[in-house]
Length: 242
Length: 242
DNA sequence: CAGTGGTCTAGACCACAAC
DNA sequence: TTGTGGTCTAGACCACTGC
Image 1: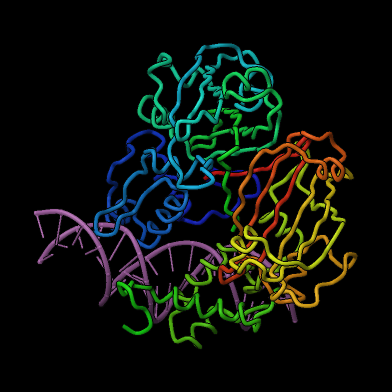
Image 2: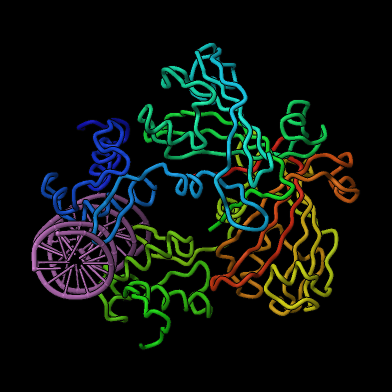
């Protein structure tokens, strides 16, 4: 009866240790790229055994929050291209390896959240949101049009069109200290509309892959709604089922 | 220089223990649903500590090969609907929960592998393959047409049309002792062709989600090539990125 | 060489299920 | 009560890194 109510669920010690460590990531005291204290040091500080700290660190590593390097130490995961590419970008050329797409921002403005946007982002309809429209190229071919929708309250002083980098999750991290930790995607096939046809240089009605993503931060709060329309002539969306 | 050549990679003890345990699954001495010996018993038999056995069992549990039940024991995972649904079937209704689809086999015949089929299944072009064409319903609506292609050599005496169950991976397991352990899927948006239109009752040209799957057994050998064409009017393909 | 993470061990105790 | 998996501890040794 310390802090949980309900059915007083049992929670192992390593889960509390994990929560404690995650707090350092959330409040920014452990920044991306930083070397965190060694297992032994953490065990001393938190008055548990090294094995318990290890178990907590292992679960965080499995969630891509930390990176462990034998002989060197444990580091806070960074949103560099290679990791984001691996973790959050599943579109790959039919032949050849995966590469990070080049982005061009078409429009970026602040507005009031629609009902769907509000529901996806756990806001109230009418709350201010930042919308970004951009196209993305893979191997020089424009294959993707994306609309991003962000809760404006968490992204103050959003930069202008040409100040938005390819890797926007890196911007989230460096500019506002927001770490994207997980995302849910829903895929459908849809016909290209007028705007799609213009942006992607394809006939109206061309089948497109529509990717609806809700991305969440370390605490599970929805931070981004992204709807991508994708030309899958020579690329595909890859999934591994285990 | 015992059994590995190359750079003499280091392989931890628990990995060898895992290999040993997986062998029981491959050779069928541990059948799906079976209770396997306790950690202590395995540790005694294999002359390692319980902790090492536990680590091996944990990795196998993570790969959905085993199911652990506190107080009861460790069991070999079964290909029941609920697990397959969770592990290998990502199409879910836009509203409401995921359900197992009803299948109707349209055609089933043996032929010679095309170049693409052979390459996907790691065969030689011309090798005998079994092809199965079926449609699948979700909530009474026909939403999926699938072509399965199996290496005939591993699936002797394939049953007739009406003897093929909804859950074909369960059939693989019970009839031939083949366990599907992983799969890779490639998704694209394509226009419905004549046959798609007929099978799915939709206009020619309707955007469909094309799912190209290669499924593999416990040893990583390709066992099934499956191409599904899916009407995504009221369903979607769900992916969680972590 | 010292310090880090990775593996392995042995033993204790807890939570859960079945009898 | 017994037996199972789940957690926690303490300590040993191995493999890798950098000084």
